[in-house]
Image (tube, rainbow, N blue to C red):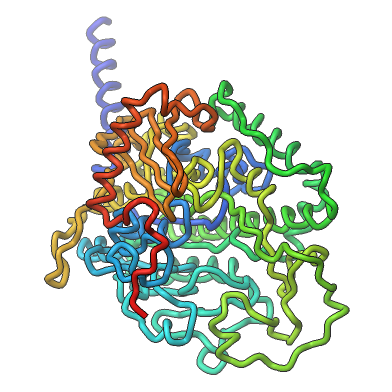
Length: 572
């Protein structure tokens, strides 16, 4: 009897060992990889990160996957994209600020040739690569800028592309829209603007199409898909059926919505309940035009909702093609909530009070990120009293709601305090994520630079030292693969930031952070991630050590000296 029992134990142990080995990345064929990037969203907007916005498809990925609580972006649209695509800090890739060339290597405003994109790194390993949505790592704001296609997706390793080259624009009529290497116009593309065109849906349509076509034309070959939504970047524009879902949801105002999110985050274990929540920004009692303010957030929520619907469609296509289980899906956001007050100035008349305009000059309409009129000739309106959502409006949701989006953190997009750089990261991969890691929270700090290292690792690729006889800068990040199995990362260097003079460094539990031309602040992230108690004077040794490490990073990563980024360096 004891011998039989012993044999059963041995067999059971062998079975468990086999199942465990079968569920490790090394035992699986190389995964497809999908990186989904949202635009201008805060840490708490998704349902699975504390929000009230309906995101059932992302919530489902989170339930079957791993949710990071301390993942970081680059605090601004294009620096984040440059870092995500290359595995470098943005200055190293040439995009330390925006899309202007300041005549200095770190601030060229376009990807340089000393970096490789994810697509370029994965291509030699046999991956097909596709990109959809916002590119924004090379100039695209004018006809002249769009003549230079050297840094368009197909020239940076991608096999197919559909999206916008520049960084913002109408959801109903986006400009600088490109298919592969061709600027889309009414004259050269029969699908230029379908009657019911909405950009978020168009991004989803092409992502789904690329997955479907890949299965038909390249069966058995792994793919990489970069899906860069423009939701929920201003302007606040959404379909009325999506807006209707949120009517009345924000009547209680900033403080009540933020308190509800904070309470939900504590229930979900996303935050330490002992952290102090920063004061609310904006006094709802003093808001003069509450219907306008409510509508701004209703439209914002609708934009996020529509994106989530699209992600659901993409997941459904993966399942239909039998690719879902062996596809690593990563979802994240490019920066925190946006406090920019675009279109929120003085009162403006309603549409009924304005005549239609004569046709706009084709070049003006084709390349302007903020069009002067709609396709049917109505003026694009801004200002209080203009309810956002339609194609003839161009308005941001404002600082008060951005503060709610960033619950419970300080500051916004642009800054390197936690509200500007904290993003959800959802990692979902049935074949590669250990069972014990599913529907779990991961509290290890990680950064955009780690995504390149992760993709190269999982794809069995070799990150190049040279490309086209040009020296490639080494990867800065570490693979997240150990976290998928519940093991710690082996990060040897701190994580760094700089944007517009705002800078930070994170090493373990310590974070040193400062605004442009202002002193360093020091925070203990375990006890005070909401950055309420500056310890720079008390823990001066820690502050000085981290400041020295940041200076060394800045020197090697093409970061301008503190306070000098605004200096004009290009000769007239």
